[in-house]
Length: 154
Image (cartoon, rainbow, N blue to C red):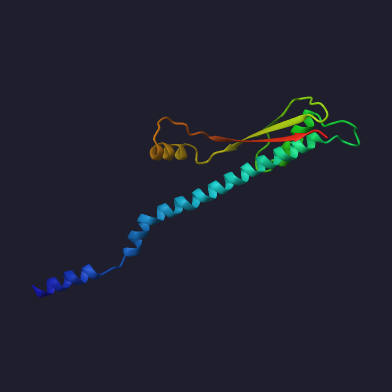
């Protein structure tokens, strides 16, 4: 009888495999957090790229070209915006200049909108609905990132 009790206490004190069980509980959370942080950093870089392209584009539209003697056209501004959005595929970004033909010393506003692939899509939507309430399947295959920039024509 004594040997069975001793064997039972010996098994109770045996901690082999405890780390594997703990990792099974904590590991998925750590991976989720690490990939979430990387995803958010990529989104931040994309938003900075969109904002920078809007800033460069409106500055380009506000300055008269000395060689040509006129301000850039809306198509030239659009081309400049597309050159500055390196993180996005061609055709994913659009820029709209308003007013289309501003007067000298007039205020210009350039709005840039880019569609970015959303690999998280429905998973993020489902998690948001689970944590903060809501229903429906708002998950999308793309995210729309926008930025506005203003300048005065020189």
